[in-house]
Length: 362
Image 1 (tube, one colour):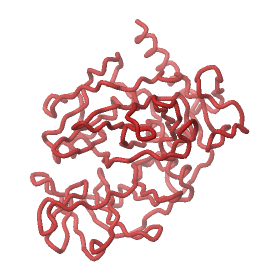
Image 2 (image 1 turned 90 degrees about the vertical axis):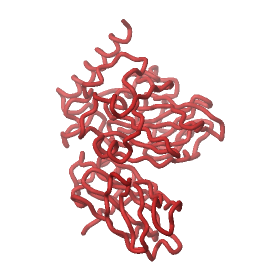
Image 3 (image 1 turned 60 degrees about the horizontal axis):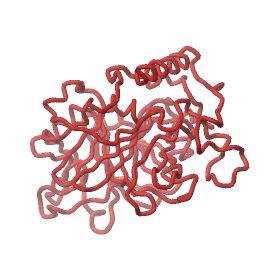
Image 4 (image 1 turned 180 degrees about the horizontal axis):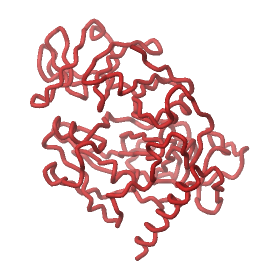
């Protein structure tokens, strides 16, 4: 009964936001979260306290999934071909986390081959990361703090109760302030592409232990309405539509954005950003980049999507590479390119966390 009441309240909350266009009038409730900042002068936050907002449901009001259950790709008939998933591979184990579940839970604390991982997704900024479930070197789990910074998820770790800004990729408050999460390579793409590349993938099940209408996107037209914000970011950049999904490479406090439309049916580019060399491979549904160092810089790459072989691109040395940058054929078989620190994001979010992103031009 309580779960149903919570669901109704969430829908009423988002419906209210939808009718008003945005919710800048939503007031922080200092009693709604144990870690809620109290003033702009609070010294224990790395981010402006005045821009930390109370999301409404409260701490763990959006419950993380801590005991995820998985099904096979053939059993995942609730996902449409064009639906987005977050995918990760560890050894021979591939797992997919559908957006339609992440929209309601935002965090999955998982274990893959004995490795504790946290998949986190912010539906308001469209950003997903995978990182090790560690705080200060100790295994932990993460939860939803109930706080937002520039519309983006703030997680908390359950070992020290420290708060972590997802898109800033940093602990911003608490005992572990200034520490960085240890990132894992994840890709975000359509279900159709993911299951083609990894037909034996496991898929996060709807049996989450919670009662939610996973077939319903809980934010109305938020994902496609460029004018609508539930929590307005501190700055906006008009170079691209606010809600355009872009692939961003992040380096220090800078970023470079790549538009999916530029990759069409498939393309590979070599690019330089912030004095580092990258190869960026993709199509209109999937982009991933790798930093090139050493003699990898001299290779010339070509898009070569071959789903039956799991190939994503190849090079002029005869190597074939998968989507995570592992050479699966050729003289460098077994070698792995270094994945770029990157994320798929709504344009506005990348631009507010890493101001004035450089946009790749043909």
